Picture 1: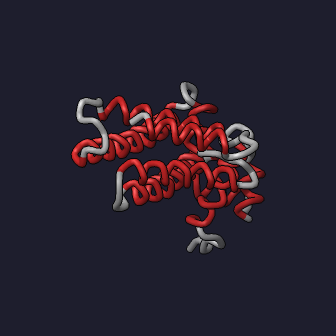
Picture 2: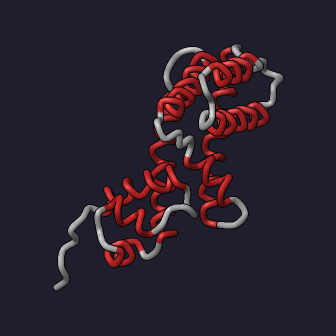
Length: 192
């Protein structure tokens, strides 16, 4: 009979997510992971198989947590533009308040691994598609309520908002103040 695991794999994925989010995939070493998780390399590989397999789990964990927050905020009651502005400002403020200025793990992964890591690229593509679909649904709601002109293309506006969000999350990594981010948010929402 094997020895019972001396750590919680779910907590290990959470700790690994923090390391990958802060350092990126390439700069994260197996030693960084075992230090963060508090296990030996053998346990790391026996449990997760590889650094990349653990990264995939961490990226999925990030996706699930971030998607939940975003969807809940977009689905609140009230005017569409107000909800959108509130959501974008919340994400920008969250990024600015992070002492490590990690930004968005999905955006960081796209910048680092797109085109070189098929699994990571597909995970990020699906995250972006889910976010874009949520924005498109919000735009359609705004059109039904008369808040957004009916002749506007919801898919195009959803893409515009996704692009705005990706840019905001990247800009927040180096912003000295929230002023520029607020201007971008206001201009994007007002353009609808």
